[in-house]
Image (cartoon, rainbow, N blue to C red; front, side, top):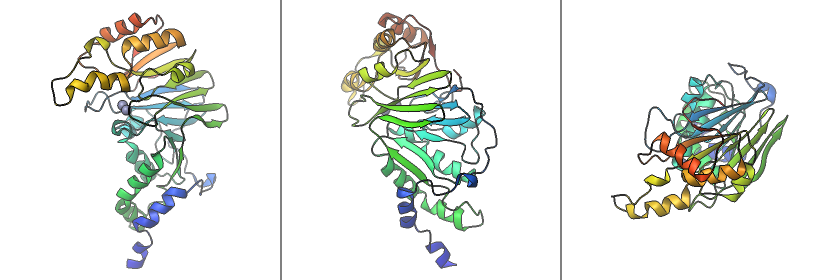
Length: 315
Ligand SMILES: [Zn+2]
Ligand SMILES: [Zn+2]
């Protein structure tokens, strides 16, 4: 019995994780429990911040298009929110996962997506797109859970061998998915000290969507958002920004300016880009109200539809 377990030691799993691409045939894919519609929809799975809030899970957004399911970011709660949204999670239902950057609040649900999708019947490698560092993170996650993978594979659960794998593509920007009428493009954005952070634009039948990830005001993102149907953008209320009374709190305004976008700045961006709808999410509140945020966007010059995004809303 010992030799059987020895076949799946962590090092073996790790190497397999790093280089596995499309190993299983499509016919091996178990059917999803729930069918996805052909029409395009955006579902806010999580709109929250690092601070735990049961009403706003960690950042994650689903785009359903052409019968496929694309997930952007994997904040904590992402898999449970897929269930809450009525999205399928069995049989490898996620077509691809796209990470904007590797901040923990955007990736704490990544092990959940990787491993729970396997436990729920995924057989083929999960397609993952993210900035440089995503492959290393993936390898380390799978290594961290190697005992679990070993027991589920070789124990009485009889887990699908290798179903935990990921097919990781790292990118600095450009088209990262283009198939059957759906095109997804990564846009490099400016998120303070991060060398690599991405927004994504999805062009699908009947709808285009831009998801900002975390960014300071960014000309490339503004360009990508021109005329888009839905712009989902992070934000903070400019009138609330001041040094904080804590160690290091004097750098807080500088940090926010370098890493994030204020409501006024976003209003100016949207006034130029003219999205058909602007959805605010991942809001650094600092005590700011919805009314203050909307007023800030208006002060920036945007006069079109603006929505404060909440978990499980659809656009
Ligand atoms: Zn964030
Ligand atoms: Zn971030």
